[in-house]
Image 1 (cartoon, helix red, strand yellow):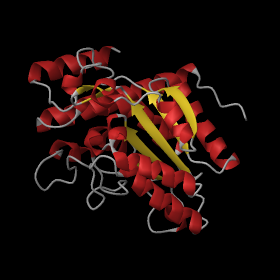
Image 2: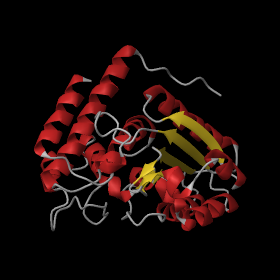
Image 3: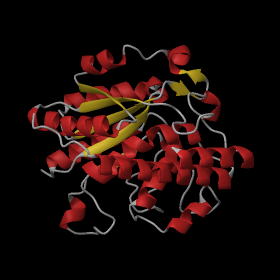
Length: 286
């Protein structure tokens, strides 16, 4: 395997700065709307940051041309974490920053769950848990049949893995040898009702994916270097083997805000004014 580029100190500081801004923007959306899902948004932001900044081949400037057809695709299967995706899309120029003020408002572009009819950069509507991997399968198979080199990335919540459709889709991915597909699991170990292992145990999670024929990579979902190396390794495996790849990213629900971290109570609750101010102060001081 070709050695993955190491981030230098300046690059790491830049990533840290962008990550803080993404978290502040996501929390601002949820606070202003007084509705949304901060916990799972904060746990997945670092994964999205590296994916959009360093890995995926796509640009908001690409339209209906050859580059656009060959763009990599991303599906947010855990659609309730839309604040994270919108924050990233805004950062990279997919829509005007003023749109975030309308998050979750009636008739607004930034609906509670992503909708491709309203927001550039959203490939498919999502949010009904368990369906994202099936959608990714269909897109990945279509790309292979068209001999299109684009890749498909899909972000899954770990609680979402309790849906039976996920495992039907996992069998399908391997059956069709979708080596252009990378599933990313936000393994924060909490869902709305508490610990995933108490609600419906998932472990041994890596072994289950291997049993379904997937190549498995495990990583720290908040370490920029590890995330980058995991994505690079996934790309390499995809080119070498006729198997889909899953990245199990160990994350912290509510990452970056002390009173939200590892607290299932912040799965789907908006902060009060005092809580919001405390969260923003913490993110400024990181």
